[in-house]
Length: 288
Image (cartoon, rainbow, N blue to C red):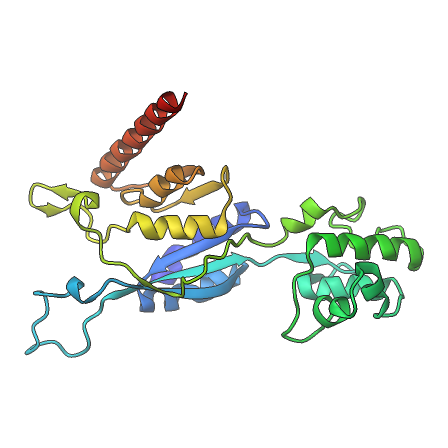
């Protein structure tokens, strides 16, 4: 019943997410397979599946070759989704961003080729921004503003400004830029993340062993946060555990919010966050 269990959470995330929100879903491979349809149903668009390879040391000493009936599992998936945004067409029907951009240009009655003139390019506008095929590109903010200005000046008279996001005011570069999730690319990083399971000083221990069986590495949390947010953005960690994502958010200058219902995890997570806040204040005072 994993999909049913997640459904109200996913619905809530969808209701409160902004147009440029990214959702990272951590799970086992089969767990993700079960929940994926629920994420799609509530408007989350699949982008990529990243594999956390914990390495052979993850099973060393814990694998009985005489009884095991398969290959040892040393992986977990971190799947990236973005908010699937839609905008209304002329008759009120909701369109994908791709279809909406083409629809708005066609609504102007102008030839497709004029989009190139509007953007000041040879053929990129018709070949990338207005195409119906898989080679479509999300128009850069400056391109969408130029296309809007051109249509409003040369297109059919209209009460609704062309490419207006709210139906009343002209589109702006800032407003258009928020219509898709952020992405900061790092060269050399693929969708296979080779990172050992947390150990050493970073691993939280109790008197009898590890407190959390699957503590996430801060390095991977930072990788996700840096890829999809800017400093000052909000990171929401609904199933906090030891709140590694929140710690990583503070390390990278983001605002973090988290929740955890396990009292043992919660107390340790709260202590970790308090320590991090204290360290941040000491660094500020030292810098001053």
